[in-house]
Length: 91
Image (tube, rainbow, N blue to C red):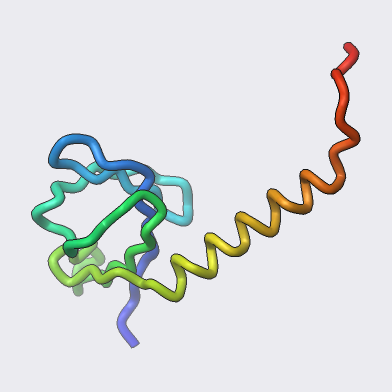
């Protein structure tokens, strides 16, 4: 299996997608280089070319990983809400 990286669409501004990698790196990539149907939160699976460069034209949307990450985020938020005692914070 070829090496690949995951990037999540943080936001779309004009004709650019702002992507965040699993290592926290942020990249701006022209929408024309990416698959159609992107939205905030979409996870992209991006292969690495032989030289180690990201192969954007071969990137594809990973719907299963997108859903898995969304479910994990919802689970974490639910857990935080359940542990929140409510009320005002006193400093």
